[in-house]
Amino acid sequence: MTEQAPSRPRAVLVVALMVTALVTAVGYRFASAEGDEIVLGPGEVTVQIDIEHSRFLPERLVVAEGTRVRFLVVNGDPIHHEFITGGPEVHRRHAQGSEARHASIPGEVSVDPNGRAITTFTFAEPGRFEFACHLPRHYAYGMHGEIEVLPAP
Ligand SMILES: [Cu+2]
Image (cartoon, rainbow, N blue to C red; front, side, top):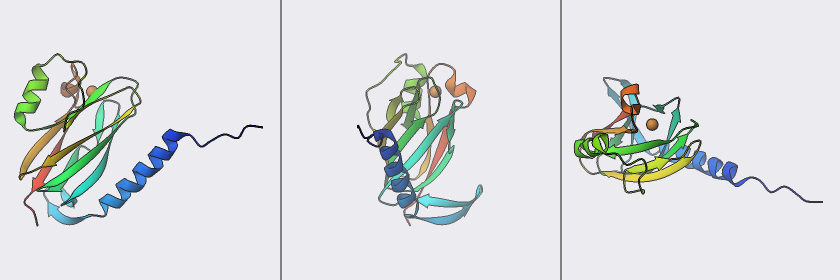
């Protein structure tokens, strides 16, 4: 008789969800033009970004200045995507670039079909940052979102 061990991906998912739930609690609320929103941070937080039908979910995040965000990117699509965040120069470089895949550097990671990937990025100063997939036609299709960074409380 062989006993089936619990599958590793499921265990990883459960841990990821627990971490996400945990860090979502670390934050505060503020009223913005978008309504009542939760500000993540300050400190270190983990956020799960889902990809479904070539769209990011959520498409908007609000974080406190100085927050180090660990992005867990979960691709529900059967095609490759990427998650890129950073300043305008980062997006310009990727929009013009022809690299189909990248090694993971802070704020930039490729995501396999139905795969998951992690990248971290520190939002050091207040402002608006974009996150996007710059694979051909994905940005134009709507595969981008916004991170608003508020001054530290
Ligand atoms: Cu994409």
